[in-house]
Image (cartoon, rainbow, N blue to C red; front, side, top):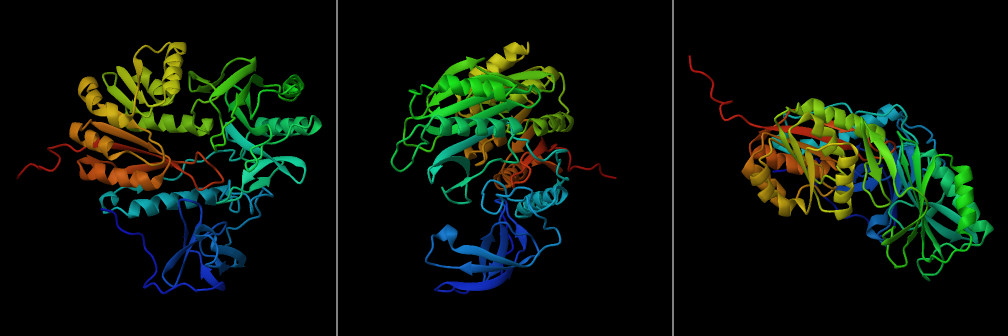
Length: 473
């Protein structure tokens, strides 16, 4: 089904010992790496750009993911610029800050096009221009940063690409300004009152993470302090400083994570000040966000995507819509006023509870939400609900084969596919197209400026049985 992406010719063995050589970057892949070829082997080199000649060092003694090191940009791309973030070269959070934003969007479109080209069944699909942001910095509505002790100092930051080594920062340019302010407040509090950061090796210490959530359209801020122990006498001092330093503060939680795991939030969240949730406004709707609520990280682009979804699907008042992976009901509730009925399916019980709450708070009565895995619920729901439109917004791994099989068996009139991973999107689209669906355009949205990640929307329609039977003359 898929055609292999173009690679260099016959492979020859890579050097058996450390060696340096120059290669040319051919393109940027979906993980943000510049791709080059050497002796038939694909090399993934971070922080590089198409067309650049770069000097790299290969060392087979290193871990497989760490064998290639960029030493020098021999011939830089004319697109290269000085990154606005001083941590860019070390930090693994952003991939594309070394190019201007319009060029970032072109590179992302090329990522989508390259994945589409791997599937002959999708050759008729056009990839639209990437829908960008007017302000591609400070756009994230959710920040999660770990704390650490480095040389006796309390620091917070992001991990070096491909490692668990923390790069200490004093500001992150993609996080909200409120998140950056909250991080500094917590750092100063921890230093002033000797609150030790958690040590992953010794499993000692108290302060683990800070999570900051913000309603970008409501200007409400939630701060979640993730700690190993609840026994912190100076919490009232921290709360006072947060209230003084964050005028938009709406909610403060203490989250207890006392297990030696990489999961950020523990099971217990204790509200210590304010409301139990913040709200975000999407169009005319308001959505409640709790500490563990999933919500698209870019509120501005979410509105643009939903507007485009409505435009492309052209919902009718008699439509019945099935929304798979419905989360807190963002898509379902946005669509609901335009159709007869919407049914959302979501595996996370807390998200289902929040979706029903959001429906009630927005006085939407033609939407219901069901708890369960899409692959388990879908066959029965298709027969019971009889949807004319099915919307899918799966995680990065895409649709499970059972979901695709059920859709092809039932054949709803339209399928709207929203994806954060162009690789799995194209895989699933190819199967659906070969199963009788057609479409014309893939619409990319830049939900994650400065990174290589891209969100896409595709609307498929069931092919008419009479479309290939022209009238004889």
